[in-house]
View 1 (tube, one colour):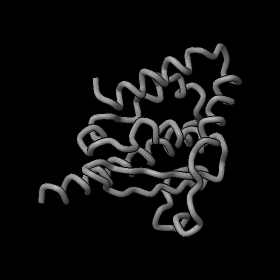
View 2: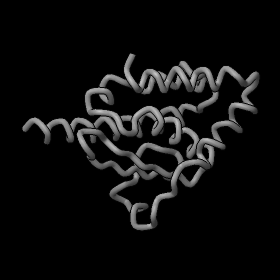
View 3: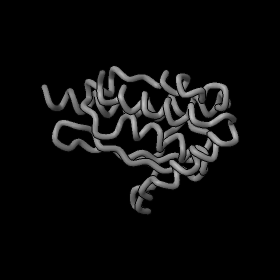
View 4: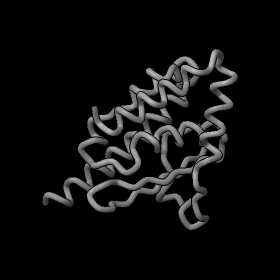
Length: 142
């Protein structure tokens, strides 16, 4: 089992503890509050993720063969979703990132809680992360 898959399994266990969506929603909001805030100079247009209903910023950098991620949103619920995505993707190798799609959000039961625009936004963030992983991998081998 990959490290990303282990994190997803832990998240599944965490979400299973809650009986209703109100509790899961609060849990997501708590996760979002735990994210380290981005500096104002990181919240620039170059770091904005298009395709998101809310304003979302994502920074990526290579470190020791792994992709390091930071993210923020102006919406608390979206910040929680970003926290989930960062738990799964931050600090992973490009290969791990490429083999882990956003389908795990459905395994957490979030498909039923997310509007179509929020699902599209999450997919846009994952797409941006995977594109950064591809660039990193291409730079490492070529």
